[in-house]
Length: 204
Image (cartoon, rainbow, N blue to C red; front, side, top):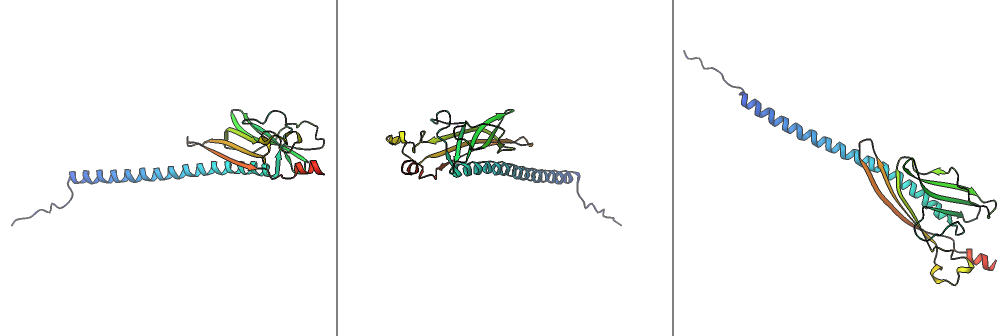
């Protein structure tokens, strides 16, 4: 009587091949998952940075729209500026926007001062810092025209007879705990909404 042995099953080589394929497949899945998580985290970090930067810019734009350039401030307004003095349309408040570095970190500061005596020089104090986490690497302000177009002494100079506008440029940077550092730039131009200053001074 012949007894046939049942040799069905996996050989050692087949087991090794199967395990190798499984490990390779698992490695691909883990790498893909890690990449997706890393990309998602980077997108969230960038979104966080962009949100704060946009908030800072919206505050600046609001200040520029609510006021006008104080052309009587000290220094020339020709070329890029690191600070600018604004005065509200009713002339009762002045606001200075300035860029400075505190412990190696760039910050944008708003200083506000009520106008009791227009002849008193603006006092720069402990203003409100606009950015908390994001670093303002660079900040420039451009004023055009550089001289008051409403002033009587500038009426005959055609190069100054334009509606005042202010262009602000900022470069933002933020380093996260993950080691990633993001940098991007924002720029916008705001035109003055004051149209009757010269008319009021001359005819009223």
